[in-house]
Image (cartoon, rainbow over all chains, first blue to last red; front, side):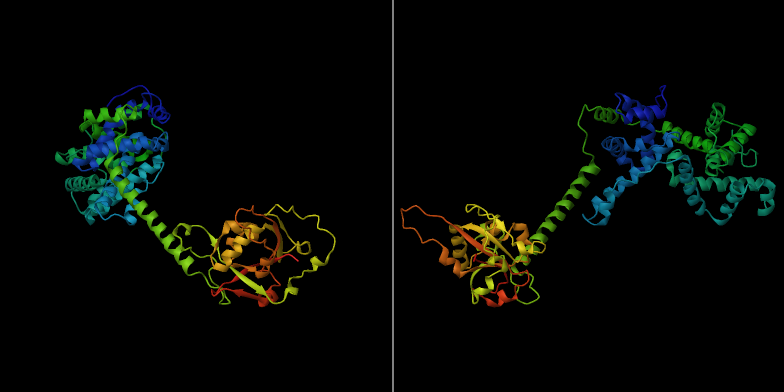
Length: 197
Length: 330
């Protein structure tokens, strides 16, 4: 990814103000991230279309999403969230087109996605929410292991005794429970994961 | 290499743990610290997110990510960037097109999602507007053809749609001729005053209206106006024929169109006695003489009007609701 010497805050301010060349720098710095996030969420055949549509929407709205970015938080994390919303809207609109014209679904699809300024806490909450969803899909034993290890901070000795496992068996059980949790999380937030695990 | 949850290494599971340890730590961040990271901490977190720390260093980084919100966010960011870097770059042609659009070198493409959807939305809007328009036309037609009846049962549309299609859109007022049995009812107390009225308008002003001075604080029962005789003759001719008169023409008689429009579709009846004051028809080739007639227009919606309504006989087969009575000024 192209690097240059200005911060994301400065770069976004230049883009929003329409500074010549600022968009090109923004694209060079974050285009691949945006493309990657879209690639993780969109159908392969639609990726290029969605990617172009994303930038067209961004430009058409006067870089409004960038104006809403809360300075001081991570721009890539924020962009990932914006891309995710955009892809959801894209397919919602596409689905509406393929269905009968008219009705509430069509109007809803036209509405702009919710504008939000995500704070650092918001980013963490979003990840936490997805994590809880993935955790809830685990079986009872995995849920208990993950909870004891990461939420209650129990030691390996405590957990061995609690689950009646040898230390080695506990490590294996813990590793597998974590893998299953991450696999579930990958379906919910694929942009954080490589294409194949 | 990152260690497993207990700090011990094993083969395959530890590899998976190394990949996921930083994300698990971010996922279970306790948010106890909200301190921006130092450059050293950033390096540690970046190394940890890349899976390049081992043993104690990894355990220390994990604690940092579990405790510090900024460290957790940094892990999220690093993971996003790592995955993006590992993936393919956008096609060059697409990049060039987007940059050209942004720099105004080429017109923005109509995005398929937007254009197709926009067309659908447009059609929906057009259909909606057309539907509302049709509904308004139907409703308007119903109101014109079946007007609201008055509580007395005498109500009838004072406005009629002309048989001439071109007149259909022109607001009009129904008119008729009438006689009055007792003309004494037309004598007002103010008429008994002999002194000349200083507020009287000049004879040529057909739009002049004078309200009775005795009832300035309430809505007047009648108006005194001056109208050209040929205009009155035209009105009366149409009243005899039962043809409605465009509202705009009647403005000097009963006020503005808006005022009359709000008067519940009432008709205007002309006193037959007006005929006596109209000039005789001029023979062909002789210049037409126009005079001014002094008219008094009673608003039958204002009290007291019962005596007038009882005394007036309307000469029309149609059922109308008389709203104004135009007669001679005593």
